[in-house]
Length: 125
Image (cartoon, rainbow, N blue to C red; front, side, top):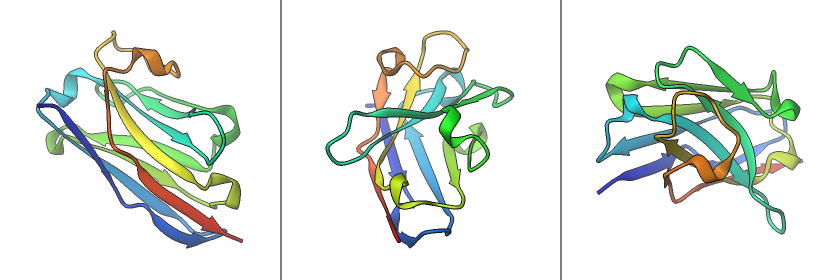
């Protein structure tokens, strides 16, 4: 079966960096658009970033441009989210997702077929 497994979360201080990984199995990873979403306590899930199948095009939430970077390694069936200059407001569960709907980056959660279980990121002030 399809599995997306996030790793790399943890507790960090404001200003630190973290890199999340999303290991995919049970699907042809290179045929899926990939994205990261996050959900903070008491808030709705929000889009973070998306990347097309070959990694050439990316799309970010406006508020995160310049601090976060999405990438992928199709040979390793793995996606990444590099997070820099972390702020307490970045505290959330981060989810990776894969979409078979075309090859455009998308912020629409409903376009994503598969989701990981989430990785907790906590940023202390």
